[in-house]
Amino acid sequence: MTEHRLFAMPFAAVYPAYVNKAERKGRTRAEVDQVICWLTGYDAAGLQARIDDRSDIRSFFAGAPALHPNRTLITGVVCGVRVEAVQDPLMQQIRQLDKLVDELAKGKAMEKVLRA
Image 1 (cartoon, one colour):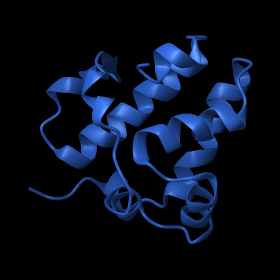
Image 2 (tube, rainbow, N blue to C red; image 1 turned 180 degrees about the vertical axis):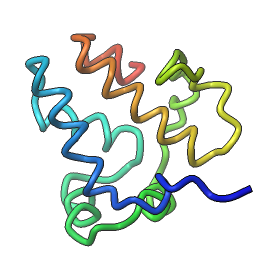
Image 3 (cartoon, rainbow, N blue to C red; image 1 turned 60 degrees about the vertical axis):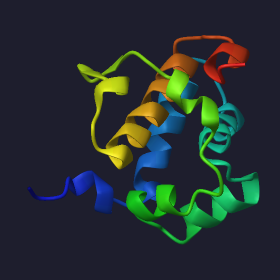
């Protein structure tokens, strides 16, 4: 089976789409960054460094300092696919991030988005 082309895409190419989606719904770039940092364990400087060096998505998640242990609580459907049913670990992490940004854009309270 061939690797999904999304894995080789630079995270810097996907990041603006996350920010635009949130901003269209009245949320901020800082909130998107907070969600990404919560999931991956990056701090603000680390996240910006990964965006600036145009790391691909595979490297972005592989280099994540500490994936949040509560990420398993992220459930639901993204693009018609149940997040918790995705078999490939990398694709599941991508879908988890997609789901968090979706919830943020839909106006969910940050405490609920971050599974507090």
